[in-house]
Image (cartoon, rainbow, N blue to C red; front, side, top):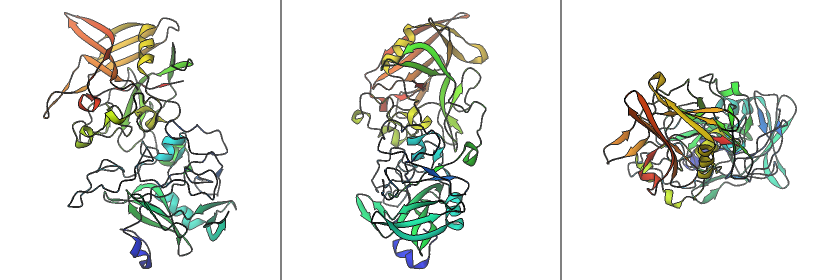
Amino acid sequence: MKRIPSPLLLFSCLFCLFAAAGCSGDEPQPSSPGGGGEETSSEAVDLGLSVRWAACNLGATAPHEAGGLYGWADPTGQAVTDQVHDEAHNWTSPLYGGTDPMPDICRTIYDLPHVRLGGCWRLPSEAEARELVDRCIWREGTRQGVKGYTVTGPSGRSIFLPLAGMRLGEKYYMQGDRGYYWTGTRQPGATGAVSLWVGVGHSGAIGNDYRFQGCSIRPVLGTDSTTFTYDSPLDTVDRRVDMGVLSDSGRPLYWASGDLVVRRFARAYIAHEPTFVPEHPIFEDGALEWNLFSWGDATGRIKYYSPEWYSLDVSSLPDEISGDARYDIARAQLGGGWRLPTESEWKRLFENCTIDCDRRLRYYRTWLTSKTTGNTICFYMSGVIGFISPEHGFYSEGAGEYLSGTKNRTANFFFNMVGEDIAHSDTIMYSSINWSSMGMFFVRPVTE
């Protein structure tokens, strides 16, 4: 399982590295999105390497503190179960990246420090962890009575990595003896991920661990070009539109100019209407991108009609999830202040806008124009995935349904062809059907 020295093989079945670090850099950093909140800002240290390393672990308030121990690819930071296999030892759980994990989760919806801290904060890659091992001087010692290693880079500056051990289910191991830090790189195959071992041979080493194990995370502060090149010139979350409506808190509310799209093996982005239509609107096997989501699924990867989709326990979730990164897909994927609009915010948008529609470019579209600011946003009406039977869903061309952060509430547009004209209705529809048995829908993010 691990590429480690032979004396450590005894521990190879126990240790899996899920990194979680929560420190800010010496430039302005975004606040932690909703649902988190325990991270304390600190310094991003320039060791003279390709990225800057946070001065403390995710969940810690000082460099000597352990912080949290997290599973790999857990955007909530709360999963602790190690029951992820069936009797044949096949991975069956949707947790920790699921049955088909991405090869690199850096700056994706599965990157916990990126979800919580936003901006360019993220997990280190395997290459960046190797750089820390190969180009730095490692010295064992203590800080505030805590055992760990001081790692000094080519710049002469240092970070301290505490030996926080690891977690397997609810049990903790090796605290004060070893440290295990996640990278964002998946191990070849679907079982493990690459981790940085601290305290191995009086230095650091690269290993592989099971994705369900709880490990430390030490974030890095990179740049957009460090890990990703954007797939589209529309990869931006800066195009926000003032539609002249207020948020529930009474502040100006800005609407994204397009819908949320998740691209496989890359970061989520907003596709700005009316210039972009995903090739795979329904999330199918092998789809490169998709734009329909289930309420309460912050990962965005639960497939329609999958066992994970059916087991999504919506009834146990709060009645309002807007801004909560554990359940709000817009907040979890885009970070910063982006979130799902609430039911009442959708209502205020409709009340303050005039509505027009067309069928240009072969697609139904509706245009909302603010009565106060004159600004316009477009909604792409390609339908929803809804429930009909255990064998089939439906996909309707003449309707569009958008998630709100309020349980059992959606914003709906319906179109009916009358000769050459389009008759439309602009309504907020209320549904009493449990979301987990109803379907998947569009997302239009908002921010204050």
